[in-house]
Image (cartoon, rainbow, N blue to C red; front, side, top):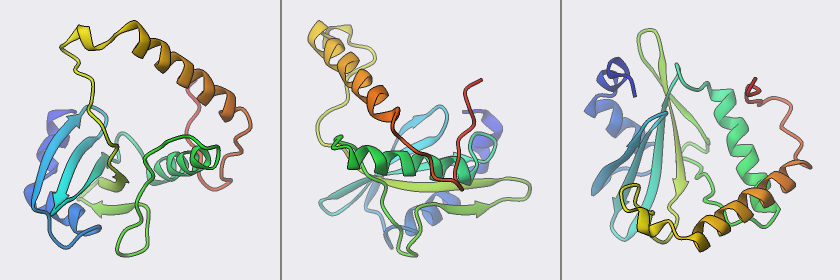
Length: 157
């Protein structure tokens, strides 16, 4: 993530983002910060994922399109981590800044453990084969997907 965007994400904004889903958070940990800021948050025994996207990377309509696609995959019997609706009954919240915004979404936390980027031994032939098979199934199911008319992601080209 670009340094000037990192500087915009203050502690105050971070806690405001979390409060859309829970009034308080016991602990939180930054998991990733490439295209989005991704946090694992915990309150008691419950964990969930908060994703914070800057408007220079994604707009609200693009995020809503992604959430629509995730719901479609669930209908197609894929094991996906569903987005969580906020205390205000919204899928996405916007925190306005002077000349940009952060868009906040929350997701169920997947069970299991993440594979290590550093430990090549975790990436076995069997895991890579399973991943390839799953990607093929996603492509096949996505051929029937009809995007929501109001929410579209930009085409890759």
